[in-house]
Length: 145
Ligand code: CUA
Image: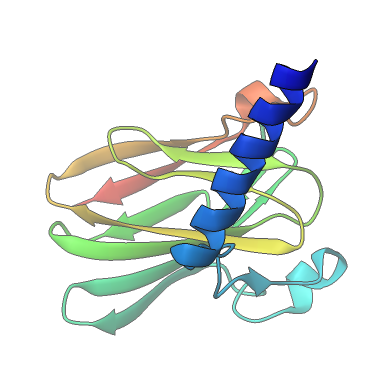
């Protein structure tokens, strides 16, 4: 018992010390959205691609039961695309096969990630969080030309 408590105290002490000494903090710059008003909230009222500069795009996605909006996105090869995604209903996933984009999509929160599409082709966007009876049909595509 004594050893158990000593270990617990030691580990909590180390975690507490590390948090203070290394300035560890929860993720910041968090973006939120009212999940009941996603369809009225810019930019998610018009999901899709927005050009930000030469070869730089933002892509806004709404993941809902059981589809992604937009269903098809066309992107020029070589572009860096920053994805922003939210959900108006339940937890979804947004995985773009063949890239490092793998985002959890939680109602009320905006998740994001960037990828440079160097290779032309059609990329599958799949939901990888079980979200209900139509989960297996929830997919979209990105055409890189
Ligand atoms: Cu959405 Cu599974």
